Amino acid sequence: MMFRAYHYARFLQAAFGIDRLGHEKTFLSRQIEATDRQIDTLGYELYGLTEEEDAIGEEAAR
Image (cartoon, rainbow, N blue to C red; front, side):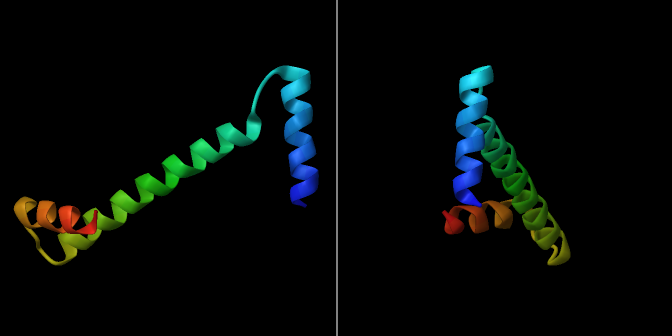
């Protein structure tokens, strides 16, 4: 499957001058980041954490 996807991406690059897989990867990464933020927000709301406690948790996660 990866072999076929690789060749498809190369075809798109050659035919249209685009990197479709790169765009899809960026799109999916952004969706994952947005979902992670939503999960964090819901968790903080669930446990009634303040913005200060939220910041502490975010700093600790880095």
